[in-house]
Image 1: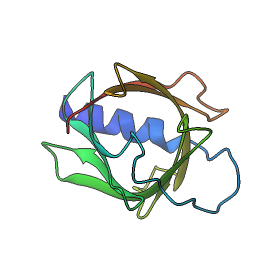
Image 2: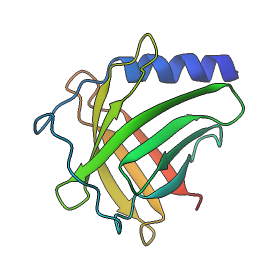
Image 3: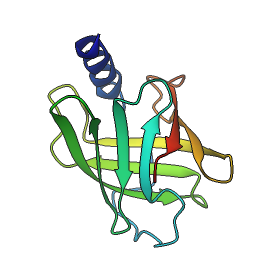
Image 4: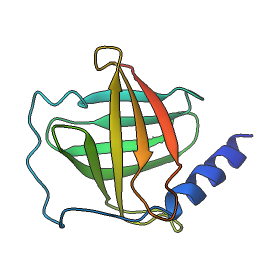
Length: 128
């Protein structure tokens, strides 16, 4: 099951394309509500960690798989941009997501901005 989940998520991420506002990374505001660790609501295996310096790590808790990335938000923290440092074979190096904040910024739903996969939506809860 874990191998299937990993394969499915890698495939999904492989279809993501970067849509956006140029390639220049913006400085991350240290009060950005995204800073911290987030857990996928469907399964606690998949997490994101967003650091205050604009770097982050995503991966699986129980598997030996992580990706490091640079991140920033635009549009009043409603759009997330990610540039992956060493993407897996089927993963594109850049992604863009719309963020829907909920529960006093302790829950988010991110929606792909990719024209190829416009219906990809994931929900996360703040871990810390």
